[in-house]
Image (cartoon, rainbow, N blue to C red; front, side):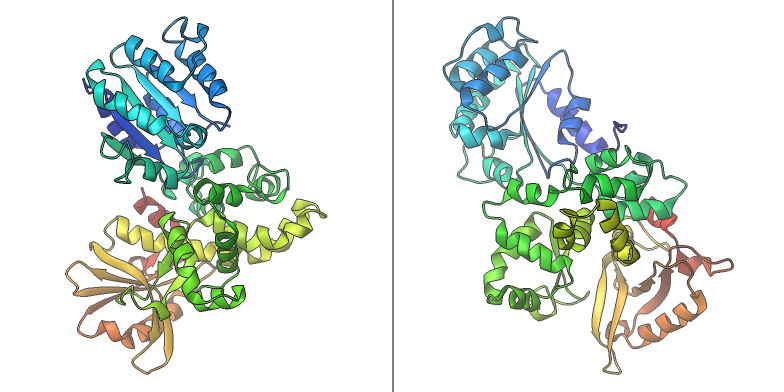
Amino acid sequence: MKLPFLNRHEERARLEKLFARREGSLGVLFGRRRCGKSRLLYETLSRERSVLYVGDDQDPALQRAQLAKEIARLIPGFDEVAYPDWTAVFARWWREAKRNSVLVLDEFPSMVSVSSELPSLLQRYVDHQSDRGVDLILAGSSQRMMQGLVLDASAPLFGRANEILKISPMSAFWIRKALRLEHDPVTAVEAYSVWGGVPRYWELATDHPDRQTALSALVYSPLGVLHEEPKRLLMDDLRETTQVASILSLIGQGCHRVSEIAARLQKPSTSLSRPLQRLIELELVRREVPLGSSLRSGKRSLYRISDPFLRYWYRFVEPNLSQLEMRPPNIVLKNTEPHFSHHVAGVWEELVRESLLRAPHRGIEWARVGRWWGAGLDRQPQELDVLAESGSGETLLVGEVKWEETTDVERSLARLEKKASLLPLAKGKKILLELWVKSAPDGAKSRQVTTPRRVLEALK
C-alpha cells in the first residue's frame, strides 16, 4: 500500500526554491536506499517541465535510448534519433529544453560506473549553460560515490551544486502515522525497533496484518524483499564487504568493544580502525563513550549498530540463515520472539536519549545527552541509561529506562536516587531523577515518569 507523503517539509521547500531560480541550477540528493529520495522528487517536480530518468549499469547506448524516450515526453521526436554518445544527448537537451525545465538523473552512480566521462561532461553544461535556466538534479543511493562526485575537491562537479541534500531515515514520530498507530505508542515503538526510519520498509509492512506476518514474509523468508537488504546496503557504498559484514555480525551478537571484535576475527585491533570508521560515516554504527569522557578514550568505547532494522537483522536473522533454508520462516521467527522485548528495550532507550536532544524536557534544554558507566564514588561499577546535562552545566538529569509490563516506580526511583548520589559527575550539581517506562502505573509520580507517547511527540 502506498503511504501518504510524510515529513520532508524542509527538503521539499529547498527543492522548490532551487527550481524557482531564474538561472540553471545543480541539485544533489543522496542517502541510503529506500529512504524516499525518488518519492521526494516525484512529489516536488512539475510533470509538465521535468524529466526523471532512473539510471542503471546497462550498456551506455541502451541508457541513452531510454533517457531519450523520457525526454521525448517534453520534446517530441527526441527519441527518433540514435545518439552516438552522451555529448549528443545533452547538447540537444540543453539546446531545446524550455526555461525552467528539470532533468533528473536518479541512481547517477550507476550511470557513472559504465560512463566515467559523465561528471566532466555535465560540468561543462553546468558551467556554461546556466543562462538557459535549465536545472539538473543528480541523485543516488551510493553515499560514497555521491559525496565523491560533489564534495571531493578533485571532482569535476565540486563546488557547482546550489543545493546538496542528504536524505536520512525519518524519526520514530512518523511511523505512527505511516502504520496508523497514533493511539498505540507502545506498538509504534515496537514497530520502529524493527523497521527503523525507512519509509519503504513501513510501506511494505502495511501490506501485512501484523508485525510477525510482515517479518516472516519480508525478512525471514529467503524469498522476502528485505531478506538480503543488509548485503545490498553494504554493496551500495563499499568495494569490499566481507570484513564490515563480519564486524556488523559480531556487534549484532553482542561484541561491543573493539578488543572483543578483534579477538573473534583473530586480527589486531588496529586493523579495524578504518572499517569501523567507515561504518560510522555511513551512520550504520555509532561509537559510544560515557558522557563526560573524551572520544579519545578508546578503551572505554563501545560500538553499536545504530540502525534498528540492521540491528534486528544481525541479531535474529543472520544467525538463523541456515535454518531458514530448511525450516518455515514463521517457525524460526517464533523461536526468536522470546528475545524480542530485550531488543525493543535497547531501541526504546535510544529513542529516550534522542528525544531529550530534540525538545526541552521538564522545562530545560539539554545540551549533552548520553549513557554513563564506570566506577561510582564507592568504587563499585555502575551504569546509567540516561545522563543529561543542561546548557548551563548546573543541572543533571539522571534516568533509568524500562521496557516491561509493570514497573515498581517507587523502588526504581529509590534505586536511581542511590545511583545518583554515587555519581562522580554529580558533585555540586542539581540532580533531577526520571524513569521512562512502557506504561505508567496508576498514581505514578507523573513528573518523574515518562511513557512512549511523550517521547514520540518530542521526536516530531
